[in-house]
Length: 299
Ligand code: ADP
Image (cartoon, rainbow, N blue to C red):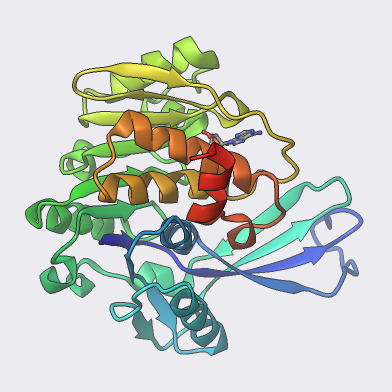
């Protein structure tokens, strides 16, 4: 099984002609609600990739909370360990202008009320992979890495959104997945540009964890583990919306690693899932199924 400990949000999207200036009122389109949050997105990605997924997160006792819980259950995700609190569920207010540029305000709400003491060791039994991101309190991330390690799981951290981390958060992490920007932030320098620099960054990050993957958007990804390193080019596709490509990539990688696939082979699947996600609009709506990826890879 795969355990995802992370964020669950409702994204509220409104389309506008342009973004408002401070103090200004604008009219927008009808608003849309989309399930989101990196944790939930990656849980859905891993479940569609064929993994047995358990989600640990925190929702408010409100209508969005009910809706999000129901949505996860519909994806065959085990939601038994999702906590509910009095107070608002996490939401992201997203305005999209006619050029497709977003401006986003995240209100973490209940996500920040998932505390270290909410993580029960029994929830971590029988797990091959524990998957984490950085949209819940850092202390909770750290505790989840410890419990994951204790349970003998492979602990994967997708260090997104970008922030610097201290060594104690990374100590129990086996595999770190970052994009170029996040890699730069962790190393406290400019984001690597191009394959050579990304590989160099990955090798430097290897000082903290045993394996590192740096995703490079349309260029693909580079990876480093104890024995080898390599570059895997992206699949050439007609990308129309790259939202959640990273989540599709990470979810598929976790799912493949959980079934014992070697990293270099699992990355091929992840690259395919990321590429497929760019061919459809939206976040969770664009996450491919195992069947779609198989068909794409012709296996
Ligand atoms: P993030 O969204 O987290 O910044 P990336 O943009 O690096 O992540 O994308 C993650 C993965 O998705 C890439 O490593 C690649 O496999 C795939 N991907 C992203 N953009 C494209 C694209 N334009 N064409 C093909 N694959 C893509």
